[in-house]
Length: 210
Image 1 (tube, rainbow, N blue to C red):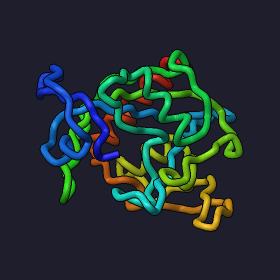
Image 2: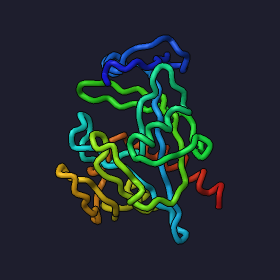
Image 3: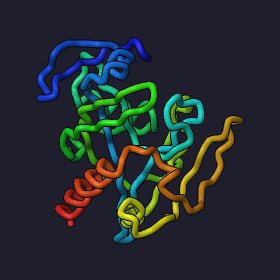
């Protein structure tokens, strides 16, 4: 996976060549990714779905993350990103069903990598029962949902803990119910600015369709 080729860009988003995933993360080169946030509306309440990262993941294992996300390879466009949804979650989505949220500059520095992404970001509105998900277990070990208003309250500091419900697949392949309270330390630390940006963009699209 580290040897996969991705397109790289300058700070003005102009393409400047191709490099491996290992190189872009080592050198902090800008490269493209695909992010999709899934939201349902049930009894006039909006819910946000999140994935639980597998415990074997190198980065941020066992934390809740963007519903589906991944790198775009050098030969791919944002349209090809829907393969991530199918691969990770096992659900079929057409590109026309996605609501564009824009390209977000996503920047995170870890101890051993600099991740500078041009994230092609989308919203997918669909009521999904948990049993429709078929997980790519080396990447994703569960799916949960929470009220979107609780997600907002968590990242604005209005609440310290919020209620989540869903499921996870344990190392023995058993499906376990998730039903508990969690705080921000249970989520991938994307950074407050990123979460605030995502919340605003999703809110705008949800409000357009009321």
